[in-house]
Image (tube, rainbow, N blue to C red):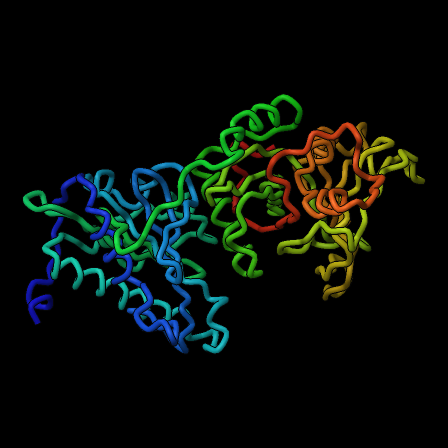
Length: 448
């Protein structure tokens, strides 16, 4: 009763971080586990879907709160608090909480009711924050003055997010701490919560570096030296793509793997780009670079829309090398002789001709004709595969960016002709190409 009596909104916050234990208790109150035998949470969700993911924005970066280990995992190593609102106190509030409701987790809930149910969960979690703040003498406030476009770019919301409510919190200027919740919603019930400072009750943020991670800046420089047709993606858009990648990996139950590289492809006709990212040993993300590509162009016979999802690069579908021969149109479809063709096997894809529907296509990533087709990268043009610059092809090949399975087999004694003897494999080889669609409505200034 005391907490309910003290519950109120306060708009003045101290920039001082909350003590670690207070931050931890705050996270646990928002969405921690209170019944370990049932994996029960402090806030209810329809059908126990537990669809709301809790992100934490602090000066050190953007983190994902993981309830089972009660820990924070670094997602973006930069301060993104200022994009959570327009009030002057937003930049200095010690902590912002970001709730992202993933409708894919609500399989038992009718589709028409998912958005409403997700909002109910968000509301319960926000009220938990308010009551905890009241019990600890902390400050918090719900607000709605938010730059929706900035949120979409930073947090990777699909389309223009519709803000439901926003709340800030933390220490009162006269008191010791502050917490700030913010709630927003997009096509996937995208929600945000801004807060003062938080982390305690057995919560430890992942370290920002680990064995091998100190070499990452050098690999970014190497990418810049070796790859042409590069794209200078702004930091805000980089963060957006990292969240799109996180969502794609979570949808395929592939999240959480550290110390590996990924190739992320945006098939949006307005973008047409491939990004190379590293999930560090510490669990954060490092952006190596991006380059122009071409994905599937519909409207022509045997042309597919490049499929969405995470696709494994494994020995089940062995790679091969281009012979450099011309087709009947005098085009080297796979590029010059020796270029590697990365094979991801038969995949179900949307047909781009006739009455549509789906069929299986062979999903590959490869170089293309250097004279005719490579200059056209940056626009949809392929039959469904991912066409990439020859220099990016060589970079992926020489440094084993997606060769985790191949390198493991070679280490076990298998002789693989496809692997170059001269290769210099990076410390974080991966195995996944992830294709997303940012649904960009206009071409970004950095896109080709």
